[in-house]
Image (cartoon, rainbow, N blue to C red; front, top):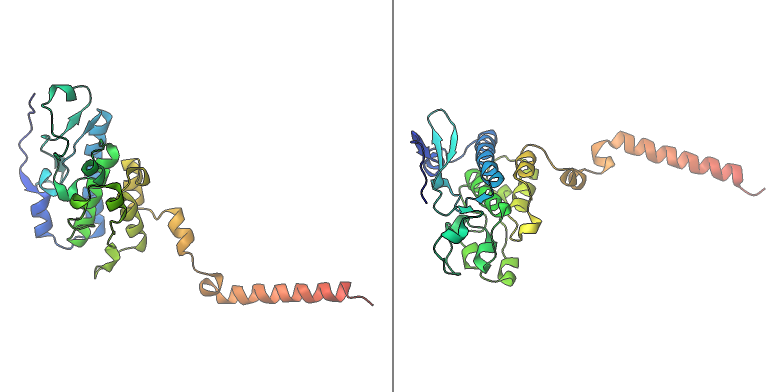
Length: 232
């Protein structure tokens, strides 16, 4: 088996991040959306990239994003033709590999999504969400102790709900992540209703006048009821 790829005139995302250490959120979204489209094409063909990282993403001179390097790609139906890989061997790059691979579980579309979320996080912060700890956690118990580092700790303006999106996409347990790339991409542009409900300020803070008018109306109604029903 072999692959034939086009020649891409451009630079890797690794180099792009060096040249753009503090990109705008909208720029990051556009890059992530293009990578997600490429991954969706993989997944429709029952393929997992399994080594998604900045060095394996190219941006050509027109700004089009290309996914490269399919050496670790899992293709349904022909896996039995590949050489046997030792159970402990990880095909991807440790810093971007989903946690489930480190405990011997099979990957899924959610695993590629995890890698994309790591890249998204890195573009926004210049660092990794769990540092190098993911590659050291070889048990479920150890993975449950992984501590996500908020993007809001950075000295830059980001919507608070973006942190919720990334935290979910980067959850160590696959079933607690987004199950569809489209959901992840959508939520990068739209605050989720769960966040809006949590973040909604009390009425007194949002509209003090309406709050006191409501209190006054309630008190007036109480007084009226007392007058009407007070025993004579």
